[in-house]
Length: 217
Image 1: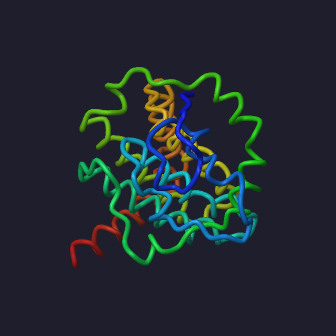
Image 2: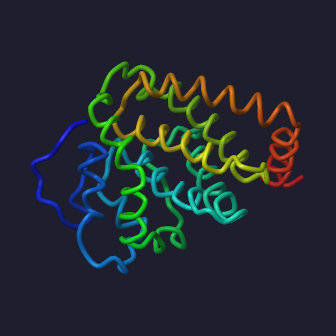
């Protein structure tokens, strides 16, 4: 992954220098301090969707049934819908922008995934930009994030960690602009939608409900 010579500090100083540098903002400081989503995303450029997604999936790893899907699912839907609309940066409603995880929560989460992050730190790099940057690629990623967000919201037993890990890889691919990882995410996302969603019929039913709600029908 890439690195930065910028001093560590508030989230507003960060740009798109890679997941390790971006997450350094959580390594030091008061564990009880809240990190508002708006502050975390302030000033970020290409990696803003990836960082937003990274923060959004944190509740999916809480070992309490129903909590992860109820919180993370709608946030992933919001991110996927905005990418489908072709936005280059996420729009965050005020009531979400003012909220965020505690620094200590991020520290514990990063500690749990430290080993795979160190492995990915050596593997990920900007490559195959055609699978990450152009509008068609962003639209397709948005569709898959929308599907995964719906699946995460559904009460499918023992899938929170599975979908959370899939979405974590999406976040890393967006932050690092790694087209190879994004291609893997596309294939895995299609497989998950086919196996868990279309196979059970729950995904189609939920998408129909969302369409009727958004269309006012």
